[in-house]
Length: 221
Image (cartoon, rainbow, N blue to C red; front, side):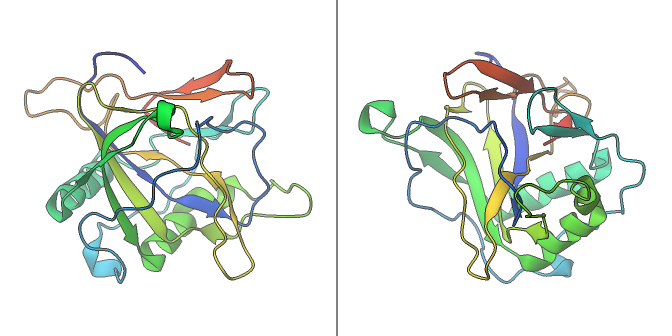
């Protein structure tokens, strides 16, 4: 992560019932017990901005990994609308005890919502087509985890090296991919000053701690 960066936001659902990637974000240990900011549960179409179906997606597979990127998945208007909704819900600061206590370093703001409607809408808008040809050990992706998190980072904040753990959804499926949709960053939402946002890339490591890829905030993952 760069030392100097402007505010960015991202939303993170997880793809369910798919084969696991070979590269995962390395974390010191298990994550903190969940804290939910704003309103969780329920949800429904009237709460969230509309998402247009995505056509002609530019899907890029990073060589030697199971990482996929898609630039400009949300339009600028869609991304800004989700940022506005998230800001209206309200974020809760997330911290941790740090690596010396066996936890990944965390300093960011978060909202956690459980909304099957939103998860299904994002899935059907084009994410499902990204996984049409992916099958590992006979498993295929069928949906997104309805637990969706919005993250906000201001200058100097970061989330340290960690692993996103697989979640049992209780219906025979598990989350085995992580989906990140960047809502602000390079080429999208700007600050009130009119300056373009900088920083906020996600760095992926292998099991030895070597950098596999750096994904910047103008793509989804």
